[in-house]
Image (tube, rainbow, N blue to C red; front, top):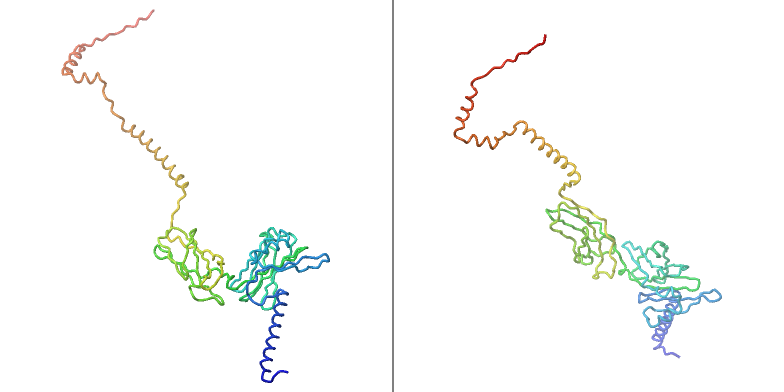
Length: 352
């Protein structure tokens, strides 16, 4: 018989004992049903093998942390599934809480069937999965706003049922939208680029939480955490510049490793006109002009020779004669011998 003085403490102890057994049973049954109640390390796998009667029989649960027991895992799985684990599953969450999980199926059994679920708070939600033939991948989509969740991927073959569990935190898989608030202006010979913080629900307004990357033409410009402007100096005013950006949350505020996609390309410039002349146009214009000039020069030279012919120079003998002092006397005496002119008349004889 229990003393009345100890009755309250006995009732309290008995109640706590019943509660602990009840909680243990709930956690045990929850794990057997594939439902996890916390976000501790849940990187593990369940393996079922089909028995001779066609029923899938549970074999064992494998933790991927247990590297020593991996050999046992390989013995229970076909070789094509040996290297499929939680690392093969990539999950990304955008700012609108759209979850996208995907994995590559290269080398996996051709007849395998795939499905995926999100498990959280004793509830299971199926994702919509699609087989992307071109990329040899499976993509699954769903809408979730959970800070902590476990993704369950089923790989089903005629002989095995392989279940891979992956625990994920929302802050580690968030991928921001591409920046769309970029302002670009030209100031003298500088290019000034400004942008603002991302806008979205549950996004921090602290600048230190974001880091941007800027690409100008083919040059990638690294920026500091919290930087919201950049000035490119000594630009070529006759050149066109193509600018795009992307952003990621820093480790100060998030554990994500995913950069956003690149923003749409914005083009500025040239700020001064450049006159580009086709070299063939130059050749086609200049060459005829050169030929015409050459012909004109040749023709003008001939015309000048006709209008102003050169004065012939006397021969050497004439020059010597002109240089003599008695040239005039010699000419006079020579000419005087011919003063008399003899006229001779001819008579034409005619026969009878």
